[in-house]
Image (cartoon, rainbow, N blue to C red; front, top):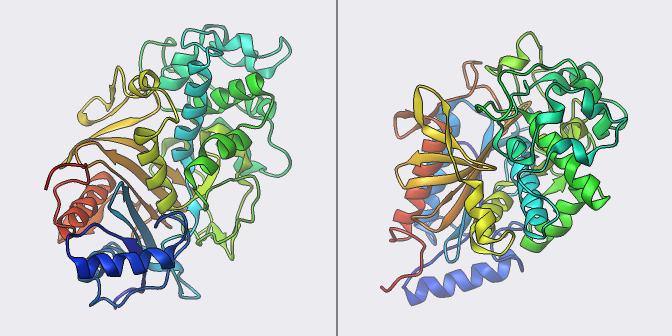
Length: 425
């Protein structure tokens, strides 16, 4: 059965008639120029290319067996946001392009931006010892290797701190106020996988500590700083710091088994959010994630990171410097100092994935095409109940990065362009 689809869009074209259509569409969208609130859908015959992409999304949803998904592409000219499937499977509530989902670890990019803004102002240095930002009585000092960790190690996930202790504590009891000290106490039994600074191992704790460092410098909650310095500036109207179980416009999340090692033995509810309420308090994440968001917003964010002055050119370059393969037997994905670097059919793409209980997100910027793109899925399992790691696209089984890239390629093809970069025609 064809899944329901929703859309809003603007797109580049050379046809005067279609330009008129696009201008009309732009009036319906909002002052955010296609990446904010949804507009009235145009009939498929008016925008055949858009209808084709919608059909592709519906096929992915049906063939992969997921409840729903959203997709957005954002460039200087090409801007479109689409959705397919259901925001809630039981009530058959259609997914909207601006349906909210948990951004999970994609929020680390916002924390990194805040840190690089401090570095640009000379208030933070990559070689700074982390311990200097916390009082002698802080539980931070009881973490293994605490006296040896530096800001660079946090940014690069090279501290060696094992991930998962804060998550375990939150699943046991997520209620109440989550302070940095509560997170540090929860993580006090964690271990070091290796000598700090000698290797790579992804850990939410690194960015939870980094967010705490930023708060010690600014005297304000990092989520509020991100809203002021990033979210509001870029017009990310659907993005908010996730500090409450109730989240407006939240799509329901669906869970099951997961391959994340730190979650082994944890039984998640089949439905991790219902009627806009999460099964647990998301505030535990802190700088490890910390935001509810939308695909249009995240596509706009990653485009803005590369095409605005959120950070300086030196800081932006540092975010992808010294990349290390995240897996010894796979050189296709590397990590720098705030961003992952993926090998794709459109060349190198930079961004970040996110997994929250019942939600998956991927955000990438494609320099060769000059566009940012994002996709979100309100499930972490496929139609057979297995961990969601592959998507069915045009009869092929693709990973999330390849799926997002394929959708961007289809958008560029539909627009009659090889890229969205300014160039002579």
